[in-house]
Length: 268
Image (cartoon, rainbow, N blue to C red; front, side, top):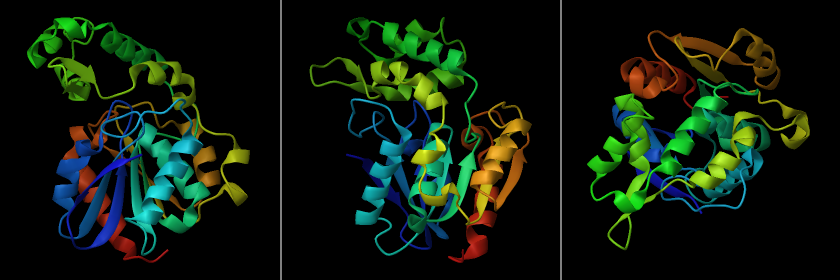
């Protein structure tokens, strides 16, 4: 069900979970920078990248699917570190709460265990992609030109167009399940109720909570629910970064990861 890519062959193991519109390969530069101290698994979450499409969007289902994949492979020999950004951060939190035996240290990047702002922005982006007439796209540059008006930010547009793939008929198709993700935005923006998060609903291993200085996805009112579920949380803010912390300030992000993930050397 899940497409994964391993990078590196030595050191502690760390799993990366991407956000909405993303793919595991978004973390390739981060994984390369962490070698040889850390060995990485880059996951394409369901309805993204090369992973299977599903009939619904549900954080518990996705976290359980990631857990099953890890038990059969990357985490077969014991707990691993998990890093999740945005939507992937919510998957990572649910994974840690429901399957704590699989997670050593957890890194949650620019998201909180609460309802998220920004639904209007993502609605606009999804609608813009869905409105693109792929039959008129002969080259990727055609898609870039067509999206320039609704998505004027070159960086954001380039990120979104990573989801465009060549189809078997010689045209283009979307890797991401746009229709399902659009319909599931209320779920993606929310967080599962406590009764679905597992026994005790608290993860007692170290957690690094990374916020972008220019982002609004981590707010003061999120601190109480975060610390209730993850009592051993340390929060850091990456200066100059917005929501896509790892791509906007990669050196600072790698530095924070390296210090936190290497600190325990497998100790809880």
